[in-house]
Structures are given as structure tokens and as C-alpha cells.
Length: 175
Image (cartoon, rainbow, N blue to C red):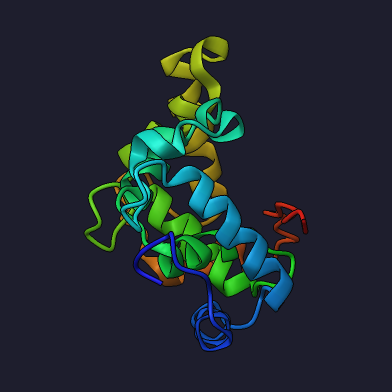
């Protein structure tokens, strides 16, 4: 599985299924493998950030730079695990854990007002002023029982998002 020129064995497919909690069928894993091989232009067995940016939908995503730090240098198994967060069959808990990692830019296990503000800045661009962003974020945090000085941990994200109907879904085309 390390070299993309090799074919997936049944064992490889089952191992990847196990690694991603069976959110993808065997047919979907084979399709993802073909896509992985297309992205891995130098056949190194890993996908670089530049190779990810060759996917137009990814390149135009306002959070692409944040996602790149999670993606750079993924092997196939890690690639599938990353994509599993977007499957409709993935648990809400897994999706929230993924979102937390996106917000926790310095990977210290805490999300601060500034971390959330940076994501909001990425998402809104010039459509909101800095003052508007800060005001909206302070209000949202206050309504959730937090302040600008709060550091949120994963359990806080679970509490805030756990009762939501969170949709993070991407269709995996089957060849």
C-alpha cells in the first residue's frame, strides 16, 4: 500500500475499512485508491499539499490552508481516514473531533477566541469587518455560556455541536 503503483489487496481494503470505522464500502475504497493514485503525481505513496491543491473544489475552499496542515504528507490509509469525516455514515462525534482539529490551529488541545476568529476571518473574507466578526463571535460564545477569554476543549465542542444536525458530507463517486 506504500507504493501507489501496486494494487490493493483484499487485506489492504479490509485494513483501510477497519481504520476508518467501516464508513466506506470496499468499492468506495477502491475508487478512493484510484483517486489517491491520480493525486500522487510522483508515485511516492504520499500526497503533498501541492497535490491536494490540484483538486479545484479543495483549492477554492476558504479553509484550504487550515486543512492543508492536516493533509500534507498523507499516505492512502490516512487519506481515507481524513475523508471519512465527510461521510454521511460517520458519527457526529467523529465529525466534531474533525472540526475541533480544524479550529485548533496550534494543536494544543484548546480553541481560543482568536482561533475561532481566524476561522471566521477565513470564511467571511471581506464580507464582514473585523469589528463585526468580533461582535458576532462574542455574542455566539456568550449564548453558549462562554466568554472571549474562554478556551474551549473538545468536550466543549461536543456540548455545543452535539445536539446539532451537522452536515459535512461529500459523495464518493464509484467508478
